[in-house]
Amino acid sequence: MSQTLYDFNAQRLNGDLQNFDAYRGKVLLIVNTASECGFTPQYTGLEELYRMYKDRGFVVLGFPCNQFGGQEPGDAAAIGQFCQTRFDVSFPLFAKIDVNGDNAHPLYTWLKHEAAGILGTEAIKWNFTKFLIDREGKVVHRYAPATRPDELVEAVEAQL
Image 1 (cartoon, one colour):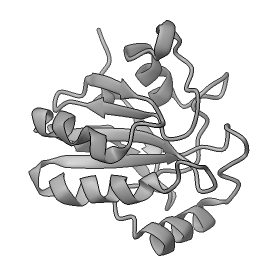
Image 2 (cartoon, rainbow, N blue to C red; image 1 turned 180 degrees about the vertical axis):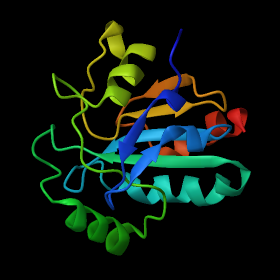
Image 3 (cartoon, rainbow, N blue to C red; image 1 turned 90 degrees about the vertical axis):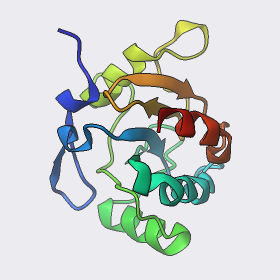
Image 4 (tube, rainbow, N blue to C red; image 1 turned 45 degrees about the vertical axis):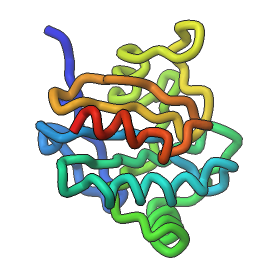
């Protein structure tokens, strides 16, 4: 049986366990984030996308990760405060995870397998890699860190 997003769960930034079945029927953008990265200003665009389409069933899910240059050193409280005060983030944020290696979160192991990167590599190369998920919980596309959130408007609208 093939897996979908709904087969996974993850700890929210506040410590609660989030079952992804709660996102059934929604279009999702899953992003590994960091607070001290050159791409960190993308939080603004991610929040704009979320606010623009959340009433139509779109949700951004942010997964802080410290595997790339130590650019997410803070604990959950520091990450939450940073995202709130600097970028007014209101989309769901999750506890810090690994996206590569032996300790990679199972969700990311699945995402990478479903949508390989350049030259077929599965590894996440940097912060702010994005995965667009359709209403059936399947990966539609993987986007590079340099792909700005405003460049995803057409793709998001096509799934809504």
